Amino acid sequence: MLIFDSGAGGLSVLKIIKKFFPNIHYIYILDNEAFPYGNKKEVFLIERSIKIINKIKKKYPINIVVIACNTLSTLALSDLRKTFNFPIMGIFPAIKDAEKITKNKIIGLIATKATINSSYIRNIIYKKSGGNIIKTIGTNKLALMAEKKIRGIKVSKIELKNIFKPWVNLQVQPDTIILGCTHFLLLKKEIKKTLNKQSVFFVDSTKHTIFQIKNYFQKINFDQKIKSNIFFYSQKDKELKELILFLQKYQFKKIKHIDLN
Ligand code: DGL
Image (cartoon, protein in one colour):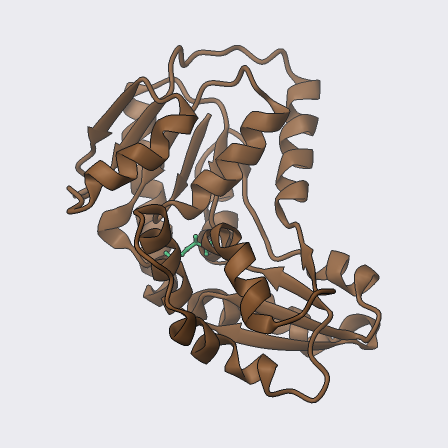
């Protein structure tokens, strides 16, 4: 299995995949050279993803790809599926799930600017299905804060407050929130505190990705062609030591640099 993201956000997805499929071997690409994906154009994101998959495909026998990133999934997944003939799963903000859960009919969706501005999300919001109101926040700052957190740097409460200001100032706040970026899963606790709400419900979008993977495994006789777990980063990171510490729980046999240029 190849799994990738611009950073550590995808590791939160990998953690859940490992829980459901403990024997699976994986190659993880942390494309930190192109971080953040949230401020990139669609063409760049499509080309970058194709490059990553092709590069790995040449050296390793991958049979399934997981795009552990909402930004890439909303902007590039359909092109990737046309380009490659193996299954490619993505992760999308689970708006339909939120619509079933919300009681006050106000849903919060926070994601990168690229995701919020994608035609995928704009179409859903335009249709306003279920008579719910979807309040969005597009930010490229929160993913960076998650990157800092996993490297042991304190998350700034003031910065968090500023990001969530549009919701905190609402008379009626969303009761159901979709964390539409895999990085944000790493900040759940901090986000809850910032919103100052006990009863907020976070929608789990990874559930659908897991379901797709399960379906795929049921259909085929899965042949584990990759024999150990490998972690690649696309840029030598100043805080690589701190990152490696965070990676300990993922049982990577090798941690290496990959040149994506
Ligand atoms: N983790 C990503 C996502 O789910 C992208 C964050 C970024 O690089 O901007 O959208």
